[in-house]
Structures are given as structure tokens and as C-alpha cells.
Amino acid sequence: MTGIEIFQTWLIAFFTLALFSFLYKDNPVYKIAEHIFAGLSAGYYVGLIWDTVIIQQLWTPMTVDGRWWLIVPGVMGFLMFTRFWKKITWVSRIPLAFVMGVTAGIFLISQLHGLVLPQMRDTMLPLWNTQGYGQLFLTIIIVVGVISTLIYFYFSKEHTGALGVTAKVGIWFIMISFGAHFGYTVMGRVSLLIGRVQFLIEDWIGSFT
Amino acid sequence: MAQEAGGQAFRADRLNAVVLLVIFSGAVLLYTHWAKKGKPLFLRKIPGLDAVEEAVGRATEMGRPVLFVPGIAELDEIETIAGISILGRVAKITAEYGTPLRVPVRYPLVLAAGQEVVQQAYIEAGNPDGYDEDMVRYVAGEQFAFTANVNGYMMRERPATNIYMGAFFAESLLLAETGNAAGSIQIAGTARPEQLPFFIAACDYTLMGEELYAASAYLSHEPVMLGGLKGQDFVKMLIAIAIIIGVILVTLNMGDTYSNWFIQT
Image (tube, rainbow over all chains, first blue to last red; front, side):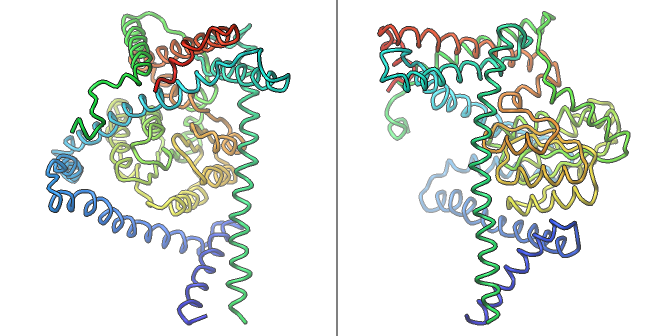
């Protein structure tokens, strides 16, 4: 290991342990790591956005490729700076409203076309003429699961009677799905922890020798 | 321009989405019209949302702040917009009670939107002087730098109530578990199925998926919002009925045309 590599390893180990120290309690070492982390990320993102957005997506396409119409989003972005002047702060609401409106519009169509309609189509499965009882069982699970979950998220009626029973079936499906997600994600997190511990033992402690 | 976009002004393969959009929009407009005319529109109780006011009240009694995290995604995520919308309702309650509010955010646009809705809420609540620009604060752009800072805040300031509403990722359990350790009452809401189990495990109340989007209408009871929610409910019922019809037709071997309409190519 070169001198700079040893320095890097020790620095990473220090910050790893500093953040892990929060498991004991909030302490000055954690605070140092937290503030350095937050400050570094703020600085890094300023540089990143300047390069990847302002230069690559606005300035270069406008000045080199002649895509002058990009001045419109450029001006919209610039309007956000009006927040620094109290009298004209309201101007910054224009780009904000634009972003929120466009987001809602795009989301609505993309969800309808990409999710809702295909999900509806894929739920329309034959309850017989299927390949054996196993397939039939799976079909019933899919159809009942989709409809009962949909009913659970129906807010216009109290969940009593038949609607209540269906909603209860729906919540069972939701919880079983959450259980599967939980197990899957925990496995992912454990592998992250293993990665950190491996670094501490192999790279950091290994650098002692 | 039109050539670059595919050379078609009208995309026939998206006709199904247009039909559903027209039905959806019509239902929303109709219910909004009824709500404005004063027709009572029923909404079932959502325990997590009923707990919001109670939780803010608890913070007021304890003299401690309310922490609201509107997720960690940009403003171009619909969950963030839902979170910001709920923030407006929560801020109105904190303005009425005079409870300190703290909103850490990860993106500048969310900061601006958050400041706008909180300020508006304080004005609407008749407490414009109670608004402080620092209530909504930019913390850090990096996911875990943001999380480390919010966790540190929770342990130092011990907010009585933590509300997480929006898009959350790997930090969900880190936030919720720290809030739990700090003894805060916690209400969470997200539409991310992979993060919901963590919130359910570590929070007192959790809003799942669609409940997050319904929250704003539920808390405000404004006709326009209620109309939207009732319109969504109408479409949900329509979807359930369409699926059942489809299953019956496909089972009887008569459903090809019907079912293929839903995925036009």
C-alpha cells in the first residue's frame, strides 16, 4: 500500500466507525462525521449539477448545437433566484407550479398506460381451461389478490359487511407482500453490513501489518 | 419536431389510456361539482390521518417540535408532491397550536415548495408572524448525509412527533428506528412497497400507498380535493368491475378482443 492509500483507508475507517458510534449514542465524533458528510455532499452536488445540468444540458447544447429554445427552461430555472428578493418572491412560483403540474400530468399518463392497464389485462385470466390445479390456484390468488387489494383502498364506504370482508382479505395480501419485501430488503442490508465489516477487517486492520 | 417524436399526431395505441383518462377526469369534475354544491361526500376513517392532529397536540403539550420529512426525492416525484401537500395541512395545525415545526429537505426545489406551503399555511391559520423561513431547511444532497443529519437532530432535539410522508428508500428504517429510540410518536406514509414494511415495524401509524395520496383531501376536506378522491374511488370500482367482466369473458373463451383492448400496441 502506498502512503496515500493507507491514508484513504484510515479516513474511510474513521468515518465508518464514527457513523457506527451512533449505535451507542449521539456523540461528538458522530457529529463531526455528520457535518463533514453533509458539507461535502452539498459542495459535491453544486459541482455535479453545474457540470451535468448547466454545462452539459443547457450551455453546450445552446452554444454548440444551436438548440436555442433551451433558453426557456434556463429562464425558468433562473426565476428560482427571485426567492432572494421578498418583493418578487412570487415569481419563483411559476417554475414551481410548472414542475408540479408537469409531474402530475406525466405521472397520470405513465401510470395509466404503463401500470394500470397492463395490470388489468394481466389479471384477466381464465378460471378454468388452465394447466392443472396448481395453475388454477395461482390464477385465483392473482384475481382475488388484485380485486381485494383494490377494495381495501376504496375510501368511499365504511369497511363493513361484504366490503369489509373483501378489504380484510386485501390487507392479508398486502401484509404477505410486505413480509416478502421485508425479508428481501433485510438480506440486502445484511450484505451491505458484511461489506463494511469486511472492509474494516481486511483492508483497515489488514493495513496494520 | 413531430417527426422526431414518432411522426404521429395521434397515437392510436394509447386510445385506451385516453378513454380511462376521460372517465377519470369526468368523475373528478362531477364529484368536485357535487362537493362544491354542498352534497355530503362520505370518506371512511383512516386511523393514521386521524392521528396527525392528535400527534401535533401531543407535541404542543410537551413543548417540543414536530419533525416533518417530505421524503428524499425531487419535486418531479408524485410522492414528494403528495408529501408537500400534506405538509401544508400539518403546518396549518402547528400554526394554530403554535407548535415549532422543522422540515429538513434534500433538494432545492423541494425547499422552495416546502417554504411556500408552510408560509401559506401560517397565513391561512391567522398566524403569519409564527412563520420562520428556517422551519424548512436544506440539509444535504446526499441520501445518507441527509439521513445522518436528520437522525442527529432527532436525538438532540427529541421532537415529540415525527411525520414521514413521501418517497423513501434505504434510509426509511434508519429514520424510523432512530425516531422510535428518541421516544417520538411517528406517522409515516409512502407508496414504496419495499419500504412500507420498515415503517409498519417502527412507526405508530403508517399510510400505505393510495392512503398517502388520499391524505391531503382527507385532512383538508376541501371540495376540490374531496372531488378528486371520490373520482379516484369511482375509477377503482370501475377497474374492479372491468377485471371481473374480463375474467368471466376469458373463462368463457370470449374475451380476446375485450382483454386485448387494455394493452393496445
